[in-house]
Image (tube, rainbow, N blue to C red; front, top):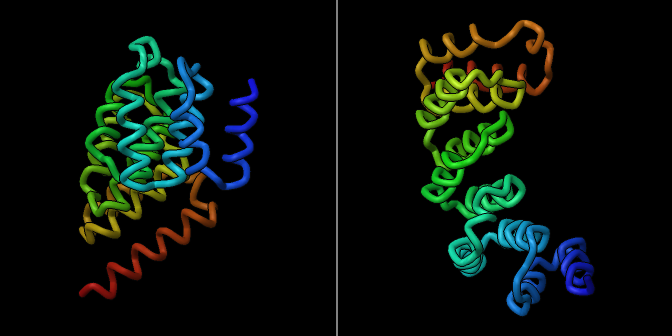
Length: 184
């Protein structure tokens, strides 16, 4: 219990490196400590933190590999640390909700992989998961990166009219069209 409070104190005070060091002294961590560790690694975003997170992931009991809280934390760590390959593996192996799709799409956009974002959207639709405003903003960002007008128009037609009043969505659309117009 003392370790948990110490760990939370380090995280709350933006001392994630110290939290990681404290975790190295823990034997038999529970799901809460594992989630906090992966969160700390995601905050630090160094190769060393990622390597330690990978090591813990590979050595923890298999029962934890099915725990949705741990899977969410490890997915976040892989994405924030830029480990796309492992992020994709975790993403494929977990029960996915719209937030998970958004995380992966943001990752793809940040790494200039807009086609992956668009392909993931198709997979999302095939699984019957409805897009929200964030998903459509990420799709518009992907379309902006691609600069393919026909693809832009296809995505725009799929946006529910009830979302078109959203300021973030409108800004993304304006940005897309400005980038498209000035790219000629």
